[in-house]
Image (cartoon, rainbow, N blue to C red):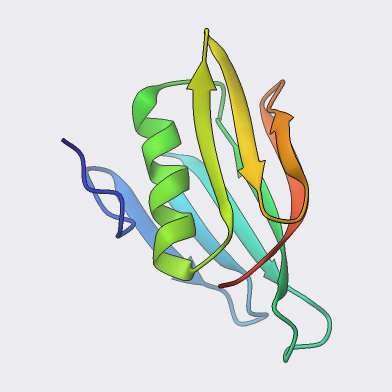
Length: 107
């Protein structure tokens, strides 16, 4: 079974830009981009998820690893072939298309 607590694996890296944006990259796609809230003391962050056109189990795993490692309250899952995001702030919503952006809280 794949571990889901740390953002790691083959062709996987994470880095933070000088502006404070944290990116989780898998192969050549920034699968997760986390922008801090304007108020740095805030628990809120803007999350962008990007499949890069690859809707695979590994892409979902990397997205969930990033959330767990950084203490963000979302999870990506699949049911009957459709992708969903379960978000503490937004509830569960369908993840259609390649990219989705939403606001979330840190734990």
